[in-house]
Image (cartoon, rainbow over all chains, first blue to last red; front, side, top):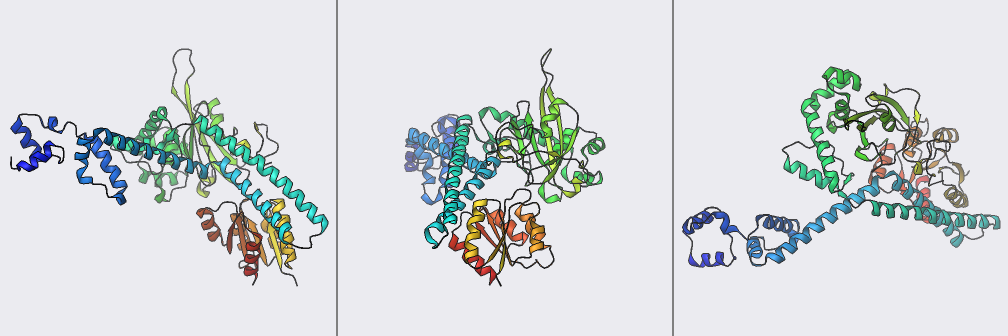
Length: 391
Length: 121
């Protein structure tokens, strides 16, 4: 077989692995299938441990002896692999939570309020502590400011705690990036230019993400981005006109417009897709319009009105409390007829852009909307359902 | 003659505290709390320095800064931007819009007074 007795001894005691030509020649001599000789040296376990060792290269684990380790101590190897997997998942969850902190409009607005409160308290307290000869009326005023600021800070902090408490109880899910990664690994597909890692999914949400990614792939195949970029400009970025040009659905055009590669000079379109409960299935925010992570956006957004008029394309200008305006196209379509006497399942999609090339199509009378009642300062709004938290 | 500072900030207690401090430093302080017509106020007052909050009702501090920079005679007026977010994208946006200096809340009184003096020199 061309190997020494001492090397064979090492193999027999799982101190050396066998593979390739050596494995085949030993199997042939012993009249065994090669897989019977590798039994015990679990390939996936070895791969997982190798990956773990590579990701902690500073520890200098004896990678060349992994097979021996797995063969001699299979229980410990499985335990180590499992701990590494848990650690990786927790790191991904932490990343997703950090993303949420950075992008959730409620968290962002509330943090701004808390820091402004703290600034006022710190500055006022510093004046009282270090400045001499403060007139009595100013002293009284600063003390009153301290009192009201500290009270406001306490209330805002409590609302923040309640928010995270609710989030923790209601969402035990993990980040979508892992699901997307698995999808790309198992499909020979080109990933979309802008998979948003903010979206979190639980185990039951993976099929939704898969179908979304597959839909992206079919649109990419049917309407290649490069040709679309020039055609869309000639049609004034009008979805209906483009659907007629390509002889395809308006929904396909909406997705195509929102998922263009960023280096083509195409106007940036955001996208949000919801089901009939309002749960967010897909989201791509833009600087002009933040989006909710899960649900509960402003009920005045056309994406919700579209459920009342399935198949009708709604075009509207949204004006946010900041004065920013975006042009929106919203459309809902049935996923399934549901069966006799059963309601059809609908899904609604809205794309939006503030690009000047797109805003030329925008209706002049805007819909005065917000992101969510809790962060919307509009005082007289019939759609309000909860108080403005920063009032 | 007192040097004139325009403070554009919507948090009233920060306005009171900073106005008190800067007045004690011998500066003349004007205030404005709404984003929608802040640039017009700056154009009318032509202050020696502007302190500008990033998050204002009505209009973003970055947009106001761009308008101020486009106002005749204010292209080089020192502008100190304040934000409650220290994120790098806010800093980059402030720099791109032409801010002279960028400070994150919460700041110390000593720090902001020193920066304002440095910008006025």
